[in-house]
Length: 396
Image (cartoon, rainbow, N blue to C red):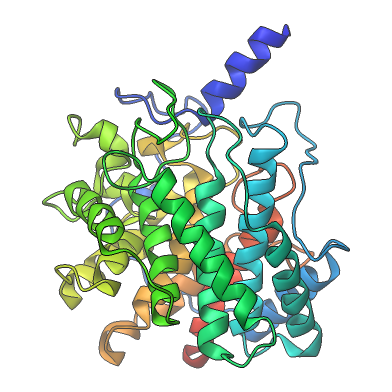
């Protein structure tokens, strides 16, 4: 393969979803579980404590000497576009912040897990200020969102942390950088294919914006000032992305194709709970409990089979409704955050299904993963799984 062909393939692998509906995978018939049918909770509930213990042990044993998780090493001959150094640094910082957040909030982390989280924070304080790789690749917005969430939650839980001053300074710096990288349509995206500009002008992604809004909310609750215009623009983008049926556009560039597969509730099931939750956290037209329940049932009941059909497929958006595997554990982790806000009556039938969904990605070595991405997939997948299962503990 020529260098030019390799670059073209890499761009195709990480490109935003095309405007037309892709053909269904030729190698698979429509999964039976993906049909719109009710699913019963599993007969035998998985052992959540054992799964958490194995996940934490894996994370502790696979932390890099510098305190980070994940690397650029890949066993695959092809990968998504993530150039060095900036994009790889963004992936590593985002992964480390996610894992650190998971470890510091899990009651089963123990001394080893908490020590690993402490090393993660030390690493992040030296690496959080990730530079944009290019006008095309700005994955660093992901690292900004997850570091803000990690530091914000640490400051809320342990305001006397010896590094509190450094974390607050880092949060202020990241909020300033988010203003620089805020797309002209109001949210945040991570690639600009059309016209790369200093302030990104291509398109925002609803789920990227929602993730960053959670980080901003955590930082603001910890006492960090967040400019109101920055928040207002992001929230306006997310509200514009919400469709009448409760789904969210993948990105604003698809606003004239609202019935494209990935914009339907089947295709957006992994991001809908998170997007609704981000709006709710900021007090913007909070959805009713029924809205939350419907979005959770889309993910865990009605369209669960379509989400599973995409897990571990090596090419983004090649599955039904243009779903990518890397949405899966992300969606379940934020679904757990949403689920714990509901009444006990609403929660009860859904927790076993959420746990079952997370366990679908469990590996024999104790890790979890949903999509092959260099060597970041096991750490980030395990971090998401710990976040979800931690919230399921009391409903085991």
